[in-house]
Image (cartoon, rainbow, N blue to C red; front, side, top):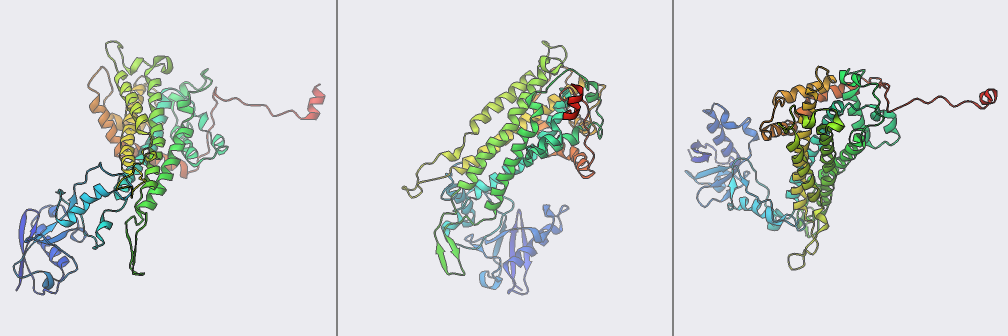
Amino acid sequence: MPRFTVHVRDEWLTVPCKDTSCSVQWLGVEALKRYVKNKPDNGGFSHIKDVCFVARRCQGQGLLDADDTIDDVLEDNDFVELASCLSFVPEKGTVGASGDLAPLSHLALGLMGEGKMWSPKSGWADAKYGLALINGTQMITSLGAEAVERAESIARQADIIAALTLEVLKGTTKAFDSDIHELRPHPGQKEVALRFRALLDSDHHPSEIAESHRFCDRVQDAYTMRCCPQVHGIVNDTIAFVKSIMNTEINSATDNPMVFAERGETISGGNFHGEYPAKALDYLCIGVHELASISERRIERLCNPSLSELPAFLVNEGGLNSGFMIAHCTAAALVSENKVLCHPSSVDSLSTSAATEDHVSMGGWAARKALRVIEHVEQVLAIEMLAACQGIEFLRPLRTTTPLEKVYDLVRSVVKPWMKDRFMAADIETAHRLLIDQKVWNVAKPYIEKYCTEHVPESRPASPTAFSLDSPVSPQKRVRLE
């Protein structure tokens, strides 16, 4: 009976084969079954059928097609290696026009048995014209897809953090009245206003903090609080637009040349050009950055006693303790850095490849800096979240709304209040991780969804920022009064 020795990770396994008309795929699966058999955790594989691998002969390292029969490509006692390949791809070096040529060349090296590789998972693609392996926008698109996902996540959570800050600064919910936003019905604006109402509605979620200043003499809130639906709203609409572009891009053929098998024709076109994702991701940077820009201004209001009516820099014994002063400086620095990163990379173009590629998108840099901008936004909002929770400490024993108290409890489960100065970087990173893992959203989401699904009547409490108008006097009554 023919036998084959298969190398899986760090083990050599013998696989007998009664029928050599079986495929190379069968041989690989049988080797994996033997590999996981004596592993307490199944070797880290949840299901064997879901494992992707590349099979190649150890001698010469030639790649084997999974559909080939064993009899056609192997001899008795041959040595075979199952490789799960992930190419090392440098992030720099693409101009995003003739595809992401340089990065994708490193990706294609793995299919040739060359280049730097990292394990585990990858798969094998059907053989095509060589240049088609590296002519495409896959690098721009993959980084851009991550940017969109993270942007969606932080935009949702920015509403929650801003609502928490509004409570601490004793702002009013009047600016989120649905009638205001129906008069300017941008989808993002209406969505953000709804979230604020869901988190702050006094009838649905009584807030002792809100009641404590219900009849104060403040006429208007700062723009950074009452204009959140307008500012955060366009960010949401921007993300939705960019997401539609990226979804189309992900599900497109950006190879070159294009192989039309049914026509028996290969055509050189321009689907490799990265202008679509490049422009969209530049727009994403500009949009999402505004979340950090407005957040930094709210941090200033929290830290400034003349604006917040709280202790300077949110700490007792000011002077001895600097509190959130340096954290605010950090937020300001990140916002300033984003202003440079938001300069659109796709406005640039340099001719390459002997003027054949005479217009390029620079989409690789657009994607990379989009991720950097979004990371800075996450970090600034993490600082605001910590500052808002610290502000609540000075308003105790008063409590905020139920969903915002849950957010406060989440933060306090991993970061304790500041009684005096301490090393803050670790706390900021912990808060940042809460946002990345969407834990802040997950805590508040059930309350927002319940508010929306139950169609709770909108409460409109009295506020100094609004006043009632008497109905206009009819002409007949005016005559009588005169």
